[in-house]
Image (cartoon, rainbow, N blue to C red; front, side, top):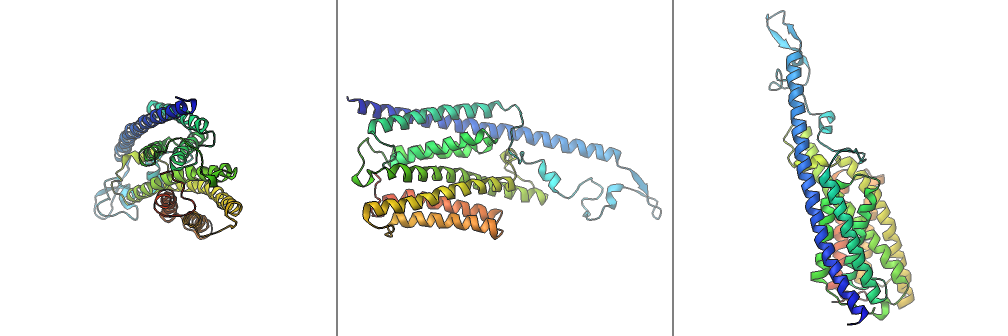
Length: 363
């Protein structure tokens, strides 16, 4: 067995170990969300009950001069319904809502969360194994490791995990760890099961230094869009929960007590999407320059080119609509999700179904 074959075998082994470790991290993140959200729910429940008991014991009584009866001072407040008067109930407000969501600044509070710290540690270990798998694949192939769909998916998953771990250095984003680790596992499984490709040389059209520039930026943009997709899903769920709380209904989905407000999620997602959009703009421009050098034209309506432009348009519409047209809340979240679905379609269906000059899936 040659050195290249040995490295290729080690790469596959490291990839399998990385996928298994990411799966353990997924379980740890989920366990943290479940256990800690139950603790928050019990604490909030006891706090509200204590406040009601104290309020009922200290509420001043006043004499009704006309009927000779007494009533609590709360009964005189305007805006209370008949069923709410005399029971110490108050209409749901933003102050009440604040009890149900995590710190919207997403800063570390120093709280003891052993499961969360263990999950992050396991995620770092998985990232190191993943890096070893991608690096050994690159050394075995003697080139950058994104020449086919298998390599693009595994490298893209590495970037997703890397972006997430880098973001953890500044913000407490452990609440999104379940979705991120789960998406990375799905990407690795899709690459291994759906797009298995042995180590081999590049096709002639890809033998250019533009491959390093064009595809690496595309992978980075896709990694950022994966993070913002997860945050958009959480934003929709949190917005629904907030509406239930403000309506005085049972909110459900107790794990969302660990997630910041929908507005905080939307703001951070918008900033990340702006960075991803800048990367994707460069990807589109670099691809056009590379096409001119390879095929003598900047644009040729190839399916891959068309869908790269479609993705750019969707995210441009998202940036424009939210920044200038006031498309906030659920509408901006759905636009972000639509953009990521276009990315997935471009990577899977376009690469495997449509015939074109970019058919480099390796299948």
